[in-house]
Image 1 (cartoon, helix red, strand yellow):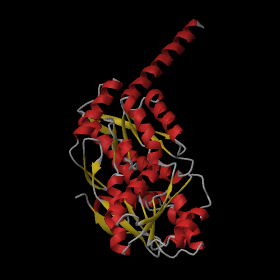
Image 2 (cartoon, rainbow, N blue to C red; image 1 turned 180 degrees about the horizontal axis):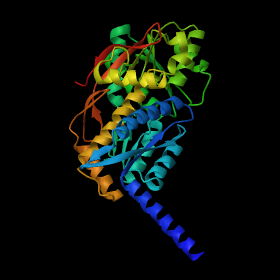
Image 3 (cartoon, rainbow, N blue to C red; image 1 turned 120 degrees about the vertical axis):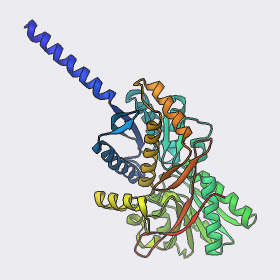
Length: 389
C-alpha cells in the first residue's frame, strides 16, 4: 500500500513539474470582451480574429522571444458589455489568470474603467476599438489600436459639410455610454465652430436599453436638420434609422465607427443603404495584407470581418511585437509585465492592417480614418481617407 501511495505521489509530482514546465513555455494573453449583452458581435469578432492569429503562431511552433519559442494561450472572458463586469473581468485576468497582457475591452464604456484597473495593477492593456480619450489619459500601462474621438469628430463634421452641403445638424446619442456621449459633444462643438453657433438644432439623448426613440426623433425631425449624427452602437442604429424613416424622415445620416459591425445590415437592411459612417478600415477594395486577412477570415468564419476584428488583429500583434522586443522573458510576472510596458512605449511605428500608426506619449496611435458608404448591396465601400494634419 505504501509503495503504491509513494508511486502515486511521485507520479503526481511529475505531472505538476510537467505542468509547471508547460506553463513556463506558455505566454498568457487575456481578452476582456463582450460575448453576451448588447453587442455580442463585437466580442465574437475579437475572439475569431484572435483565434486565427493564435493558430498561425502556434502552428509555426510558437512565438520566438529571446531565442526561445513560447506557445500562446488566449483566455477569453465575457464582460457582458457592462462597465462593472469589465472591471471584475480585468481583475480576474490580472490576478487569477496571471496574464502577461490584456486585450480589450473594446467599447469605451467598459474600456475606461477597466483601463484604471490595468494601470493600477501595472499590466499592459490594449483596447482595439475604444476611441474615448479617457481610456488612456495619464495611464502609462494602457494603449489602444484605434484613433481618438477628438480626431473622429472633425472627420464626420468635415465630410457632412462637404458631401451633404450641411448648414444644420441634429445629434442623437446614448447618455450612459462614454463613447457615444463624448463623441456627440465633440461633434456638436466642432460643427458649431465650423458652421456657426446654433447650427446644431437638436441635441437629444437616450438610454442604452431604450427601444422606442419616437419622442427624440419627433423633436429632431421638427427641427428640420440637414442630417442626423448618430454616434451609437450598431444595434441601436438599426432601430433609430428604421424609426426615423417610419416617422417620415427622408434626410441624411452620418455615423461613427460603432456602426461598423457586420451585424448592422442584418438588423437594419434597406434602411441603412446609402448611409455613411467614419471608421477604421474599409473591407471593400482592400489590398495587400489587409485583403489577405479579410479573405482568410471570410473563408474561415463565413462573413466579412468588421473593424473590431481587424483592430483586434492589430492590437494583438502590437502586444506580441512588444513581448518579442523585450529580448527575453524571466518567468517573473511583475518583471516581465514591466518589460512589456517599456517595449510597448518604445515601438516607434507599426504597420497594421488598419493602417500605419505611431504612438504618442499617451499610448494613442496617430493614424488615418476612413469614411465608408453602405452600398445598395449592403457592402461597406471606401469613400475617402482622412489623415491627421
